[in-house]
Length: 250
Image 1 (cartoon, helix red, strand yellow):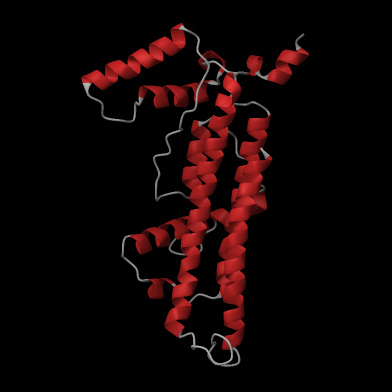
Image 2: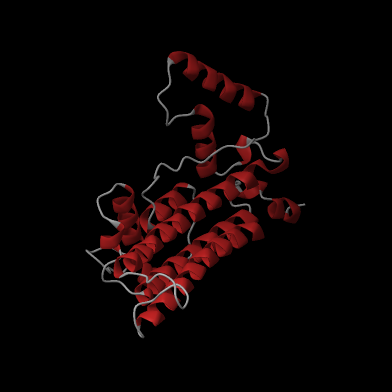
């Protein structure tokens, strides 16, 4: 699962590179209006605010991409090399598999309901191995720490978040909202046109953005590590079917 960790760190590095650019611009402001090169265009206050507001989009992208990749890593492990059968899955993962195969989240006509029922029936009666499937997220555009914790609970996965990091991500920083809630709301307000990019970037500094990025990345890194540990320990299987337990029982 090292690729899961690397995926997260690569995405985070993109944000760090952008913040470094904003740092350079902010430093130039101290000695006058920043500009591109010695004789290039001056970067206006409006443009600077627009650049700042883009950090919220990047941070939300990091949140949703991290959740998506964690869930994909889980299903890839379940379907790896056709090793596991539905009856070997933990209760929580079995529900997710049935939800995906039976398409229980979709409005189906009678013919499609019959087809999905037959697929499920044939899979179980023939004891077929689990193939690729997708865990239903259901929170597109609305990912924050609460949603992450909810879907982790749904999978039966315990998130291990150090107290200091947990406190930072939960403390109210704006309008009784924590950092991931603020990022989610601003991203949605920008995406739906409720807020302009200039308005979103007004009154913030690179230091503010770095705090947002730090609190968010610390929390997400622990989420990634929790998924990695759970996958490496085969927690998606019932205890008696986990490889290390099979070995120790012989």
